[in-house]
Image 1 (cartoon, rainbow, N blue to C red):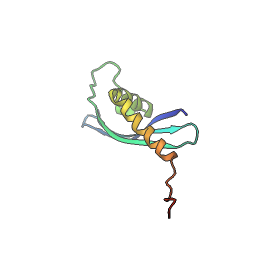
Image 2 (tube, one colour; image 1 turned 60 degrees about the vertical axis):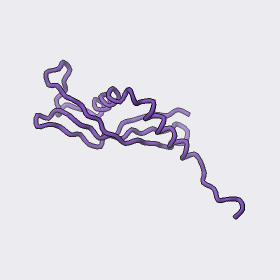
Image 3 (cartoon, helix red, strand yellow; image 1 turned 120 degrees about the vertical axis):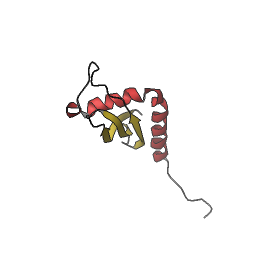
Image 4 (cartoon, one colour; image 1 turned 90 degrees about the vertical axis):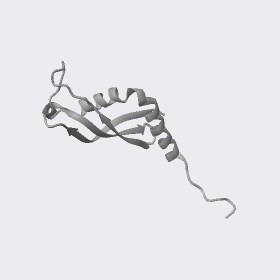
Length: 102
């Protein structure tokens, strides 16, 4: 079973100069067997520097760019985030049963 992880951007918050400062997101994992999903919700603060090389104005941002930012910003938590998602998928595979004694 392989799991594909994707970002869903819930909201983007900017300062008065349209520099991105805060992103609310959901990271979703989908397995390739049954399409079962797990997810984790979070927030990430960023500091945009309009003088930095490679700066992207707000109007030019894409979902892919934001996803790459989030991947970089959460790199030190990737293992924990993915393990949480994987656990949800595994739990979704289980069947809750009534007690056999009635």
